[in-house]
Image (cartoon, rainbow, N blue to C red):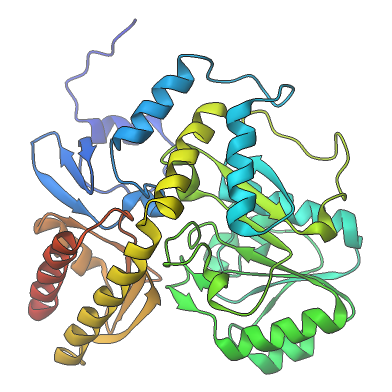
Length: 396
């Protein structure tokens, strides 16, 4: 195998090789163990980022390693021309936990959203309106990008898809003005991730359900980031009295490998026939093998309840820190291990200082510290984070 002999740093080589689309973190990671990452200098970092909510079981989880090795020694890929038992078993588990009728497996969250858009258009036709909410983020392919309401992601890529519009977040009056007989669907993250960990209000969901029942439009739960136990429930919409028609999910379901899905109710179960939708890699057997481990650990091995309980502790302690520094922290919000701390100033310096303390966090929407730790986090790990965060806020 040809090796590249280069004395330049990997960061210099990265800038030469790749399109400049990512703001790289200045760490060269060597490996991970549990909830920790280790760089090439041997420094150990507590990870409250988890690959943007992907690594639900942390790093090098022995059950995932075993399942992946076992499957890849049989075959890594066959295509969806063949039935594979591991794929069927994963699909059965997803339907069991979601209560939905049918599933389609993709590679990513944005593909899951694209599939949901296609099935709605096929069912409802081209003329009805599809809505998302302001501050939403649904992905970067053209359909998902059209749904994404945040302008900074869309500028320069117009024209986008027609008959897709936005409803003001948690604005019941705007919902009533826009959603009606000519509505095909409303897409929403019940807890927005990229938008700043914003929680949909109970009053908004109640009115949405009433309008859905009255007019028959679909509600699509984008659970790409906030699903599979991350909020202490199977999906974030489970905190409300509403049953979505379609659920899109991804990120954590592959245990670190690319895997996405959209699941549909009986209403949409027969919309697609053979050839109307497809994928080459979606539902990859190795990803499904890892995904089965994730679903077992989250739903059968007590992990979701642990996230719920520790999430309450995390929010309580963050609220205490907020009360100690009200001039610095505006609000703490979220559920389980999807929590946002809104600051009264830009959050980049907090991320930097936390990294110096060997704790990795993410900042979104400019001033919201977004906490997305692996679901295997324990109380000792939480206290380590809370101590470092309070010390950081104190000096800001």
